Image 1: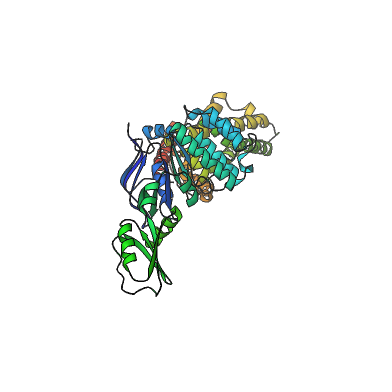
Image 2 (image 1 turned 135 degrees about the vertical axis):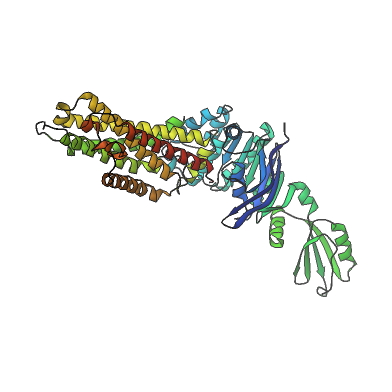
Length: 297
Length: 229
């Protein structure tokens, strides 16, 4: 049994001359909660579509649980193991909540009645209500219910908290953690909400312009990246050459703010050796890391 | 369950088509005593049936592929459908089978209504000729339906109805002006080449219509399988 839930190597995809993905690599271990981050148009949704077999990569290969996704029998069987919440939350407008649940259930032998009941209650979904009569948030909840109750081994969620109020979003995030820890469900989700990614993800990949710019365990990345602030009493000297590892340097008045990905101690020592400086090192938040990497890229 | 989904998508349209059948039947009502000759019979039976078929095909194209086509507004439900553990081929087959069944039901109902309101139909043609005409008509309408499916596999929603109606009417006009044997004028099985006139089964025309339908459906399936969403 493969240890990876998702593996993608060298994915390339162009639309009318615009490169949406430029050799993207992705490895999502089984059982992980994986945050997939990037700006609008970075290639997140294109990647998700390729993983779901909705689009084909021009180059490269992807596998989910060792199976190539696509429109073939093994691809169809693979989808029994995947719960999917797309960016667009529209469902069949002629069905009610209970009709779409009844419609979906027989496709999935692992359907979880317990989770269905639990989320019907937790999300306060009215079974008799027609789907067009549901609010955007309610439709998001229904999509999540339909994805989770499949009893999937992998949930692929494109902006799962989009349309949910903060309380509901918080509850959902908690439920995702419970699912992952109790059932070993792998959760792969894209999000713009960096705080919520930081709250639940154990691994992340940040992509920009169709390629991965950073990837790894969130805690390792946060340990690896440090913010060093150097304040000069007499202004910043013009000719400083910082040691290697100073990835992003910003001058703000009399202060230099350095994001270091390695060699932090050496950079600290270099700063302390300069005359008239006070030096401090801070851990970075995911938000800071994301913004700095985006600016640098 | 896909059949049930298909039924949900079909039921409103079927109801609309039934209402249309009633309207057409009432408009075609002719209390006059039966006239001799089959010409008036053909006109009485085929014109309303043809009209119903074209309107049905035009109106039906919108949901022919049950959300498989890349029409705006159907994206969300399309993503949900495509996330189900079934191949696009199966989705397509279920949708097309339901569409053909729907077409057959409409044809039978149209025929029944016309039979009820047209004394001439009840009096003159032999039941075997009526049956032959019904079968030929089904082949003709199936070709129209297949054309609708074909267009809906790659055209945007707005253009689908017009494309189907334009091609059907255009084909009928062209075929009626080209000097081919009546048996080869596929779409004329509903008028000049009708078994009500010829008293024989228009096998060649039916084979042409069948071939056309199969080709169109196979191309549509190929397009749907290669679509990226």
